[in-house]
Image 1 (tube, helix red, strand yellow):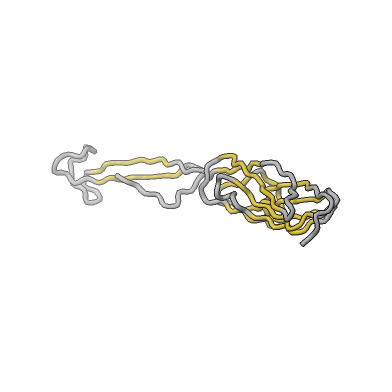
Image 2 (cartoon, rainbow, N blue to C red; image 1 turned 45 degrees about the vertical axis):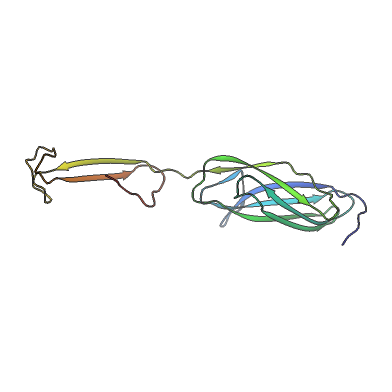
Length: 178
């Protein structure tokens, strides 16, 4: 219910956080692929009337950050309320800066002011493959040939391939095509 007397005024704080065991919350500018964190929105009513049924929703072209809901309810004058929601980054994202806006709704249309903000995303480290191959046809490993390391008509050859990931990223399901 509520009455439309006076004028609320809102101060909005937006924070991206991660939580580490034993270390508590840590402020971030963004999250990397596979990480989890929180988006915390704090609204302080600096006016002389309450906000009634105040809620906020994020707007973004990126579906990871779009339509996140922040239900605050009633915020009396000089009162501060916060709400945080989980952010879970997929295992692969590109490095970019994602613009996000907060859109507020209130029973009487009296809205706190919020500036757009950016969330940085970091892509995962990538694998880097090194390889070495040797053609064999010298009679070892069921091969048959003259030992000159060339595949010639009538020979049975083998191929030894050695692959090494010297990059910083993991390759979860590598495939070799010949």
